[in-house]
Length: 159
View 1 (cartoon, one colour):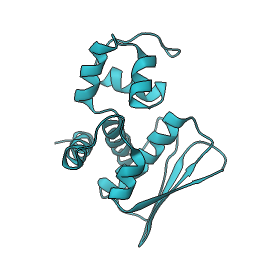
View 2 (cartoon, helix red, strand yellow; view 1 turned 90 degrees about the vertical axis):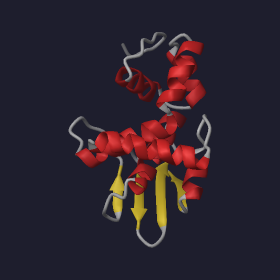
View 3 (cartoon, rainbow, N blue to C red; view 1 turned 30 degrees about the horizontal axis):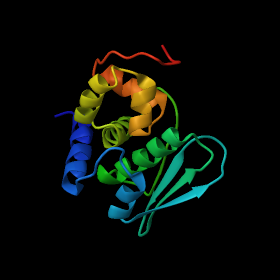
């Protein structure tokens, strides 16, 4: 099994074990894992995970809520996937290392579970705005997941 597929399965199992429902309360996940989330102002989008004795995520509070939620989920995913190291930092870019791609995949599945997306896709007739609002994610995250699942969509600024 690929590491990317494994990351998706880890997220799915975590959601099932804790009976978490959409929209996912990302703060509840952090609390279940004994991870403290702190909000601060700093330059750029992103979040930082310190995975030492105390687990801490520092997130830029000046982000759009969907991006903020994804960045927290991404850092939580490093913890769920047992990535080694003390500090992880979300960063944009196409040339991400495999462990970052795995964290993205896990975060996406935590916030936008594929089976729930397939159900809601038909209910909302592929409307990106309605779907992103339902899952409380960014438009970019929703479109990325829709493309991965080959689901048609409309009502977007990104085509």
